[in-house]
Image 1 (cartoon, rainbow, N blue to C red):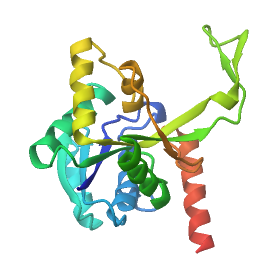
Image 2: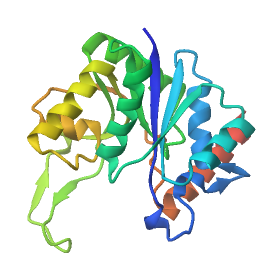
Image 3: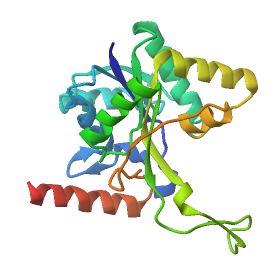
Image 4: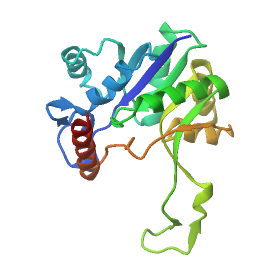
Length: 235
């Protein structure tokens, strides 16, 4: 059985107010997406990588992969209208070349601090349970609001988990979910875990980390740079 990483790099960076997509922002002369790719490149249990890429940036990604020696990158696929479309595009490409029993590890291209432990746990739990969703505890009080300025309701945080990626599934399972979602008119599931829940499927949790942050704002970028510096100094 093979383990295929499916990375999403379809975002346009709108929350950063920058001209280039956030996954191509350079930090210390290296694009963000390369930091993420390197984590999967270096992981012994990842056999191949497929990236869903923002239209028009495929050749740039290819050039960066070559420059930074990402040898496991096999296919680059054009992203879709939203996250669900993009992942489906990637899965349909994977279906052409890999076995339905192979595992797909879906990961946000802008979660560049994913650790080897998180990737390993995702693979192991997917093999054991049939799927795995990286998740972490909720330490803050979570409020419900409909107007964004006031609230009269909170949720008991001991029952709440914040999901991250990676998400692991056997290829046949996640393909079936996407085909079912299309049939049922589920069209904008933000993540595979959303889709699974919308299809009434139980999901199993795997290791996550506060460091495994999704870099979508300038604040996130600052935290990422700080973590990189910390890693460099603690080596």
